[in-house]
Amino acid sequence: MNDHLNNGSNGNPLNSSNLQLTTIVIHLVLHKGRKVIGLNFPINLKLQSILQIEADAKWSNTLRIWYIPYNKDAYKKLLTAIEGKATIVKETDSQETNTPEITSKESISQPTKPNQSADRFLKPVSTATAVNTPNIVSIENQEALRMMKEKLVLKGYSPNTLRTYMSEMMVFTSTLSKVAAHSLTTERVKDYLLYCHVQLNLSENTIHSRMNALKFYYEQVLGREKFFWEIPRPKKPYLLPNFFNQDEIVAILNGTVNIKHKAMLMLAYSSGLRVSEVIAIKTYNIDSKRMCIKIEQAKGKKDRMVALSPVLLVMLREYCKEFMPKKDGYLFEGQNEGLPYGIRSLQEVLTAAKQRAGILKPGSIHALRHSFATHLVDRGTDVTIIQKLMGHNDLKTTMRYLHISNKDLLKIISPLDNLILE
Image 1 (cartoon, helix red, strand yellow):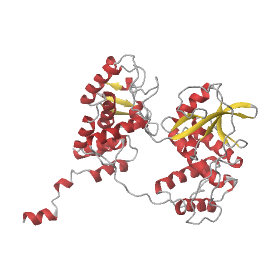
Image 2 (cartoon, one colour; image 1 turned 120 degrees about the vertical axis):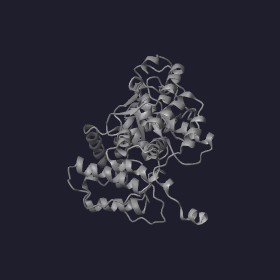
Image 3 (cartoon, helix red, strand yellow; image 1 turned 180 degrees about the vertical axis):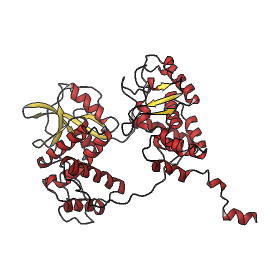
Image 4 (spheres, one colour; image 1 turned 90 degrees about the vertical axis):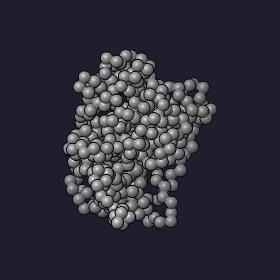
């Protein structure tokens, strides 16, 4: 496969300008006698967590805004962190900007103070009252966030896990206001989780995610062993995976005209890959001699080998002739040279293909992975082989596909059919 690849231009990812993204208004402000780039946006704790973790944004208690240093590197880091999540608007002209720096023509202004009113779980809250989460973390808990991030990095947690845990911890500490997180007892944490259940009406999965983050902080960061033993976890609903039947897969692929988009969708389905694995594939990971693909450092930091479909190989060769990806780079590059194709853009590719095919069934790129496993089960493939191809640690995870396969269902004659036949 590598013999067919040459250095060349980038691909053209799906234009995502029509997505409803959070708008960040940037402007120059003076902070402690120096220029910084102020960031004004609606209250959005998830976005704040991303800015704090990935763009090194800081909160100014005096100006009441988030800000980053006034230089090109900090601005580029900001653009990378918010890609697909928010858009940048200059305060002076209210137009989207892609420039890597702030020009000297922009005025230095004072930001508007955000609304900080909130009902906290430490006070009685009426069920009829709308609950707004505060958007800043007090000085008392900023050290807790720093210690938690440091511990996550030292233990080698993945960027996604780090982002999720820090986001959940940020919501928690924001709700606490000036109450120090390290001072809470198990009972007080129970009160907070009850507040999440009753007042916020969060889903079971969100509660589990929040509990995992808090458990890490209290047991791993603070060293309080068995801190969560007395706190019950909500029962997760048993949900069958979303998947497409073979006719729908054909319709999706036929409805995808762009050869790059089609190659990515075919790769996801033919090898059962996660969306993060599709975009992370390097050109040299495709081994056409042994007809296999090496998946490097996937979920759980595990490498694995998957089969290379002969049909996919033909498509990849056609794709490489047109787009000529670099031999030592990503197989599917995004708009920026040297960077992979965006996850959100690929999800939008599938959404557009489903619309063209008239498919109303819910399902993202991950549904292609579920379809791969389900169709293998339908064909009688051993479940342990599917487990290895999917990269599952636990066989129970793979066994889910037995419940959605129609291999055994086709052998069953409905009592209604018997009545008609008789």
